[in-house]
Amino acid sequence: MTITDIRVRKVAGEGKLKAYVTVTFESCFVVHNVKVIQGENGVFIAMPSRRTKNGEYKDVAHPINSEFRARLQELILEAYEKAGDDLTVLDEED
Image (cartoon, rainbow, N blue to C red):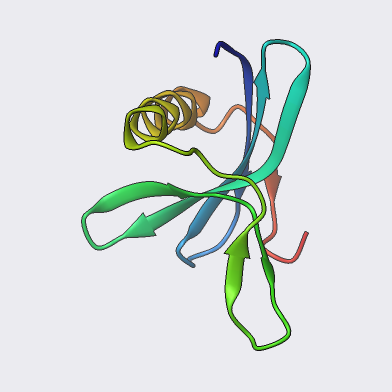
């Protein structure tokens, strides 16, 4: 599966959330709100999720195998690093 577009929207503030990312696959399927998070060992991605009735979070969309997840994270973090300060910066509440 080819990733045809990655769009990064950085988040202002001192929190762990650093950006929201939109990923387009094969120019025909899009996933919004992939998050770039600052962790203890560097930045990583978190897939879009929703809160269940019992308070847990479940991914709405996610890779099925570790190889694709690693490649997706690699490409998203490359785009995040290249974005620099050139993109519109959002407040965490946006």
